[in-house]
Length: 297
Ligand SMILES: [Zn+2]
Image 1 (tube, protein in one colour):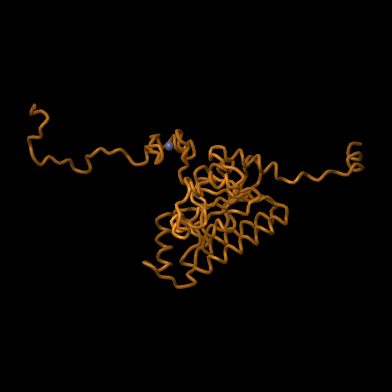
Image 2 (cartoon, rainbow, N blue to C red):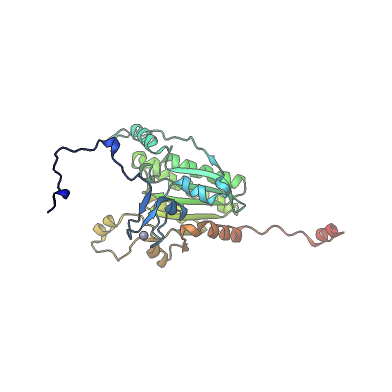
C-alpha cells in the first residue's frame, strides 16, 4: 500500500471555520422514494416530489402564497393569542409552551386566516400550521375560523378551510371541544346564506378537526397520501383487536369509502378550486324581460 494514502502526521485537524459544508436547504430528498431534487425545483413544484408525487407538509403562509393572485392577501385577526383558561401544566406550563412555540415558529397559533383573490374570485381561506403544537385546535383556532366564516358571510365570499391537525388541544380540554360546535354552527350559517364552503384535508387531519369542520364542506377534497381519520391506527387496532387493512386512513382509502369528493394534486389545486368556485357561484340574477328591453332602447 502506497504511503500516499496513509496519514503519516497525527493530529491534523481542520478548524471548523475552514470546513466546507454543503449549505443546508440546497437539496431536498423525498422521504418516500429518496429522489433528490434541488430546493429551488422542490419549491417550484409546490413541495411535491417530481418522481412519486409525495406531498411534503407546508405552512399556511405557503398556501396563501400560491393560491392568492400576485401573492397578495389581507390576513385577518393576525394577533389573536391563546389564554390559559385551565392553568394547564404538563412538562411545561401552557403559557410557557405557547411562548416557546411562538419563538420557534414565528406563529401566533395553529391557524391563519386571510382574504384575497383566486384567479380574480374573492375568497376567504383558513389554513392550519402543524408546527404550532401539532396543528391542535384550541380556542384561538376555533375563534379565528369562526370569525373568518363571519367575514365571508358579511362580504358574500366563499370559504376554503385547509386542515392539517392532530385534533383538539389537550391543554385547553373542554374549551377545545367547544370549538367543534362553534365552527360547525358558523358553517351552517354560511350554508344558509348560500355561500360555498370547500374543505381541503391535508396530511394529517385527525381527531376533533375531522369530526367537525373538515368533513362539512360542500366539497371535501384532500391532498394525495394525506392521513385522514378520527382516532389513530394504534388506538383502533387495540380497540377492535384486529389488524387494519393496507393503506387504512390514507386519502385514497377514505375516497374509496365515500367520505371524500376527490383528491387533488397540489400543483393543480388553484385551477381546480377556481373551477369549483365558478361552478358553485350563484348565477347572477336575470333582469326581467321588460327591464332588459327598456335597457336596449
Ligand atoms: Zn418521491
